[in-house]
Image (cartoon, rainbow, N blue to C red; front, side):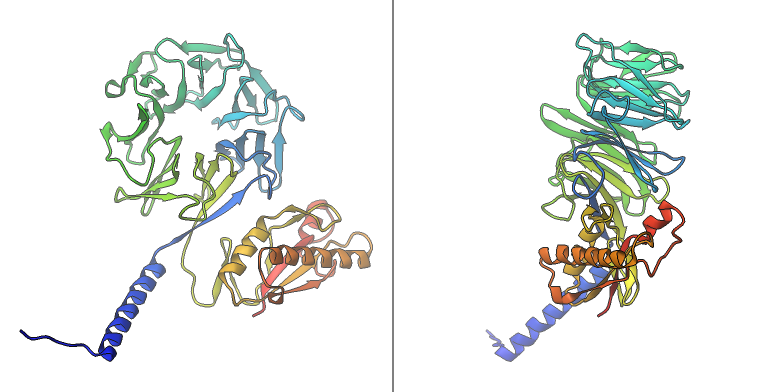
Length: 458
């Protein structure tokens, strides 16, 4: 028997070779695997009035986002944001459960207790109460079909449709089922209805049929894939199940199949996003699930309520229960010498305007989105030093503007320091109104000049 004895020097070389190979393989994977970035908007850093987000809808006409929250309805646009509540509008309920935008641009809003509202393209409100004994029945979903008929699913009173003049809620079905979670319209204008007693279809002749294999099985959500496959999430006796064209999929140890919303996409290596009780779930082309949650990523919540995709840039947005709204961006690897601030690529010496808001004529923050991104940037790039520059518009006294711009730059620096960023890595400068990026002839242009900028200096 031959016994080979390795010297300590030989053993060290073998270990070193193994480590180098591992590092090389890891680096190769890291360079080819895209990263995901999550921007969170909530009551602390935005105009969103409540951190429970129930539904999202993009207006294709102007790219704006409508947000149904537990504290009112929010309209986000590139120009500004508007909050609708019982205090400042005709809404009679703070709790907004669902929203859909019709083909003509009208908004249809379902509430927890005040029925259905319509906001037309001129901003006019109309209101219909849900006929029920309590008169406070929750609206769970609203859908417009190809004939522009509006369908309403409720918590206790079944399915309704709205007449063409928005004058009457007409009961369609409350015997076969009473709770409607989701209404889907296919290419033939057939309505697919997810209920607590199974999956039903309603054709153009008002014939109601049940999907046989799912009889008496609660259906959480339904959607058609880009391949026109019917995707179904259901729960039977506390066991969540997922079906593709009626075929039950194998259970996954990573993802809980009780989906509140499913969002199919036709992107490379992506087929379906799902709002899951285990976090944000992504199904790839290989039928593998990835779950994003606070335990394994920067995604802030394990309770995801709704999803929507921006029709223009295809960005995915997720609403959560308790953590607000999250924008999901897929990031590509950057070339050497470039750094990532949020979703923006920057180089040394480049000036970047930070997304930061201040209360009028003060250094008190009204929006800290850009500072949160800056904290993350400084934590990820430990050797970088930056300059923060404060600017104002030209209105008022020049010396006071200079003082205010210094205070705002210092406020950002203090925020970073409170998040364990060393003061020696941050320089501040004040410019007052001496370096405008826009004219000062209107409020909108003056607002652009009231800013804090950042650049990498080392």
